[in-house]
Amino acid sequence: MNSQLQFLIELQQYDLRIFEILDQKKKHPDRIKAAERPLLEVHQRLKSLKETGEVLSKQRRDGEHELSLQEEHLQKLRGRLNDLKTNKEYQAHLFEIELARKKKDSLEEILLGVLEQAEQNDNEQKEVETQAREVEQAFGQAKQTLDSTLTSLDQELSTLEREHKSLTEQVDRGLLSRYMKLKTLRKGFAIAKVKDGTCSGCRLQLPPQLVAEVKRADELLNCSYCHRILYWEPSADATVETQPPVAPSV
Image (cartoon, rainbow, N blue to C red):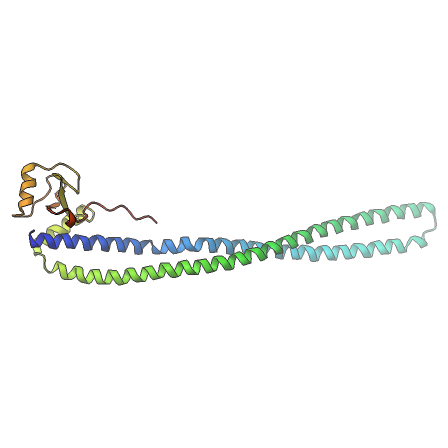
């Protein structure tokens, strides 16, 4: 195989891997956010429960104060019974006492409801606090893994860019310019393998004469349709992947 063509094949392999790494690095912040989302949600839930707890605590204090005042009022009403002189006054006062007692019972019922809600809220808050600790630990581990992966990618990228630069210095300037233009036009794939008489880049059938000339490798030839630089490998074991990669899953 033409040595310049071999350089281009290797160069494309470097370019594709570099592109893949850059794509992975670009997705890193979103992956961190996705991993952190459960933690933010459980913290928001915990915040809501704490705010509810504060509201219920105030309602309890207010309810206890109001109930205390009502009990004092009821005791005063009962203490005045002996001061009444007529039966009419006595009956009217008993009615007032009954109304005060009913209000006291109502306040007690309301306060009991608040206490039950507060207890339920406290129990739920304890459960969510336990869940929050577990989620925090899970996020910490996930972030550590993602950051470790990013560090490895940065190291690999640094090595690849250094080797890529060294390789470009071995390619003819004119050919390198041609390769770079095609790479831009064809989304990273400037060269394509001829397989079963077709261009593996655009998947279209090539003229037999062109296929024969590519096999002879006397010169670098382009696909008649997508204009990628063509090459042919007689050995199946030496296959170089040149078809567009499937976008990596997130």
